[in-house]
Length: 235
Image (cartoon, rainbow, N blue to C red; front, side, top):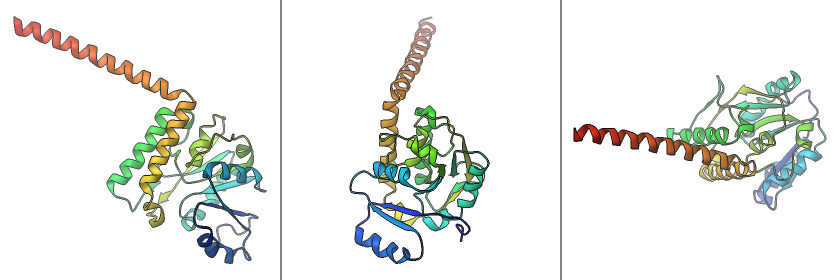
């Protein structure tokens, strides 16, 4: 219903067992323009190839639960029509939220997102660079390189360094049973991608150097405090 009035194609890139995927989606292929793609290796390169082969000039990426995500497509399209190059459904702007997860899971998600924005300056234009729901112009996809994308597609896209205009709309992420089973694996994959991107952009070295300078300052302050404390005690 959310896509009524639009011409579109649905490309499904999956690591699932082929028979399971085909059983779920092939019956819909007669009614909807669906293309099934089974990734035999890393998903990133497969997704990138499909992005560049897509026929439309606007591309949507859905890593979340499809039914709720599709409801946000009109708002994302509106953001693109108003000049954005990348429109993101964000959990971290006013009106956005994460529901159905415990405090520990929310904290872990928040820490991972904050770390990405801390060590990767190119992704700071987005409050939610790890969102699993966003849309972009075909020109953005065509500008991406093979080494850009990883398990979190938006993160790699923002880290490409291009000066794309980004706009975020609020999105409430509900509990997703299928993804919750792999939540820790997703977080570890995200951390690995953040580390790889920071190393490539030489931001990791700067971050470590900044941390060492900060620690050295703390050491000097503590040493000075100890020195004067000892003098007072001796007197």
